[in-house]
Image (tube, rainbow, N blue to C red):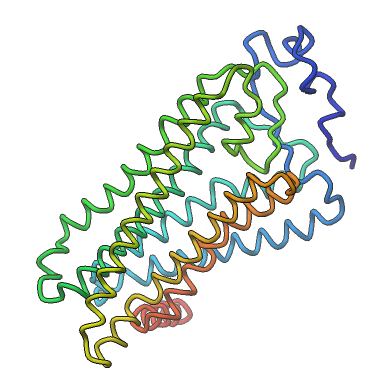
Length: 331
């Protein structure tokens, strides 16, 4: 089985945007994209395939168990409602990229339609932003629970919970749609090789046949809005929680810290991983394949760790999961 390299296709080279490209790709421009993936792994591809497949199965399995366990009527707290939504987002988020990566590791050439590429791009960004927005909502939930415990149930009513989750999804859509629409309307006349494991926005942008200054500005603007807005709200919530905890007795303080520990751990991992990916894209010393591996690990890391962190740090959830597993084994 021969390996695929962009140089094997002269019409896909960046120096060939002539009529030969149009003959290959169609007069209307690019009709599909080729996902380059990790072309230099050779026999190591099967090792990475096995690792990714195992991670993907564990992500789907772990988050599915949490969602089913949270159907327990005893777990009717708003926190578990938000956690259920976060698990769903994590499952769909990994599904937008990892199956594509797995397919690329088994084939010489992985192609994707133009529409499919931009749909993948949209959902990848949108679900990433939505996940952080739900983490922000969960931080607000912890703030209300610790700083206003007597009013918690009257504040976090079911309509408010639904509104907060709808706002998180809407925020993800608002931060994603302009970037994707602008990218979709750009001309792509060749080459059509995406140097990534999926339709990564910055990798696809390099294939545009016109000036992308506006694209870069819009992309950076909305990325900053999504990151800064959520991080400021989360930080503000925990600063207020910190002030409230400082006035508690030791026993109350320890209980409050246990309540926040799982969420704080997930937030720290998520933003640290996102920062590392951001840096790797802007440091010239990183090769494209290192960036791909970093991106893949980032997209799988938090969805993989979230179920373990929450189940290990939360006794009620752990008990619900154990009851669910026992009931399944008994069938």
